[in-house]
Image (tube, rainbow, N blue to C red; front, side):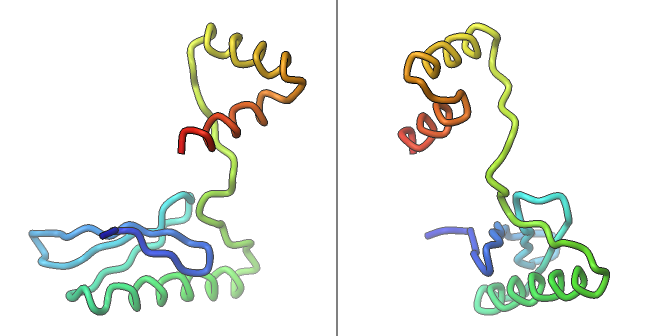
Length: 109
């Protein structure tokens, strides 16, 4: 069971709002806000797809490049000792710190 929806490279999470008795969702991993809701679980995927399509149409109309969920880059803050140790380990392997961290994350998943 999952509360994550995927469509056209966009990811959204869905939650139940007890006050409104609605399923509410939002596209994650981007700055532009894309929200949707539905009264039924059967219709939530349609509401999500419609919200993404509306967002893409809006961007096309405005001549704006649409954002994507998870562009593949993010900032990570670690203490200086961990930063140094990771940089040294990457150098010893003759790879970039970025490559080292990407491989470490992939291994942890």
